Amino acid sequence: MTNKKNVLIFLSVLLGIFIALQVRLVSSGAKYMSIKDMYAYSIELESQKSEIDQLNNKINEIKSQIDAYQTAKDDDGIDYEAFLMSEIESTRKIAGLTDLEGPGVIIIVTDGTRELNENENPNNILVHDIDIRAMVDDLRNAGAEAISINNERVVFNKSNVQCTGPTIKVNDQVFAPPYIIQAIGDRKFLESAINAPGSYSESLRQWGLFVEVNTSININIPAYDGFVDYQYLN
Amino acid sequence: MKKDYFWIGLACIVLGVFIAFQMKFIQGTYLNGSTPTQKTVGILNELAAVNAEKEQLIEEVSRLEEQLDDIQDSASDENAIIKNLTDELNRFKSFSGMTRVTGMGILITIDNPPQDVNLGLDKNIAYDYKLILDLINELNSAGAEAISINEQRMVNNTEIRLAGTQVNVNTIPISPPFIIKAIGNSKTLDGALNQRFGIVQNIREIGYYIEVKQAETIELPAFNGSIKFQYANTVR
View 1 (cartoon, helix red, strand yellow):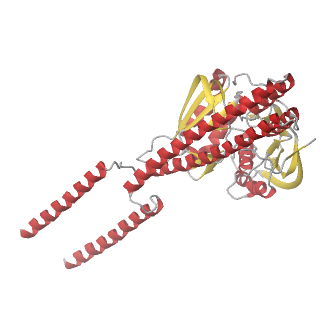
View 2 (cartoon, rainbow over the protein chains, first blue to last red; view 1 turned 180 degrees about the vertical axis):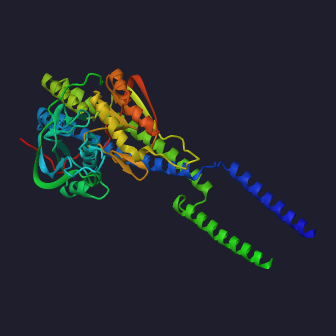
View 3 (cartoon, each protein chain N blue to C red; view 1 turned 90 degrees about the vertical axis):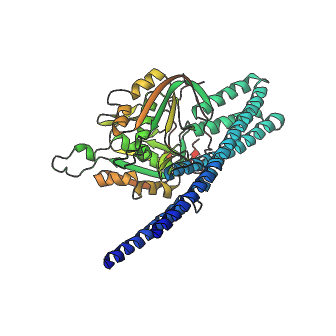
């Protein structure tokens, strides 16, 4: 009997300690957060921090631009018109409106030639618009500076790669396989973006499609030729 | 009888070891060694501080941009050729996504479904980032003039990339909910997405939450990164 009493006393003391801890916790302003929420918060923190880095870079860039404009305007030795012309040229380059050349890769993608298995869907060995899009995305991630598909420049806000039955439409031009994707950038990075295990192209190869990458020291990529003024933008 | 006690004792020891392991693991991987409550308070404070800093930086960017505009305006007052050139520059700038823009458009919200406790499966739209690629492509073919995801403007070099459990856009990690804004004819954009068997239906059937709203005016940020060409040269 005394044994049971002792246990009861011990448990009461324990309960008392827990209550005291809980009260302290709540009054200190701590909130309960599940591990999952905490993980989500730490990801958000990371993302905010990298955004801050980006903004800091941008601020430095604008500051140097202000300096450049100010000196071009005040200094009589610098022709302001010529300065503007060179600014226009570099903006056109960023916008994808100039012909570019440089080292890079040439990728050839075409439908698979293997025999189909019994009852297999022929779509398994055909190139689809999503395949091309995913490869372009892989190339961008590897730092491609300019990309073209069958000599049509890929520009983000205007180019769409659309399935049109047996063919694919890029910039309103229709192409049939083989598709030739060219990209300017670091040759090693671009090549491994296509050849690396786990890349999208690797899974295409496993389905039986033909994907070939060649590096080249000089690739020509044409300008995007559909420049128009926007209608809805202000 | 005595043998039973032995086994119960052994089971308790094993259980104790497991619990200790679990605690250590959680503390090591998610909490970096601190207790949960310390970490919670710390993370919330830090988040608030970082948010405030970001707001401040955005303000500074717009202040500096105004300063730059003033310089350009005062220069174009001097003669008409400079004015024309400045206008030309601004046209190309807005085409390449370097300016903040407003206009008529649509707002798309994509989020993960609430966690299914029974199955214990986590569906994460980040793993299906190709659906987002598809969505962006549909927007482009419906004539969108500017697109942003979670305040990251899409430009020529923008990648959408799975990295861990989030998605990198312009190298900034973002996580669901994804808020995609697009400027263009809002009826056309909305119609193209909501077509039967279209992309919205597709995403919904896979189990994600998606909502499309038309908006009279919508504001998109400028591209905040910098594009530098190391390899590509202009052909003359």
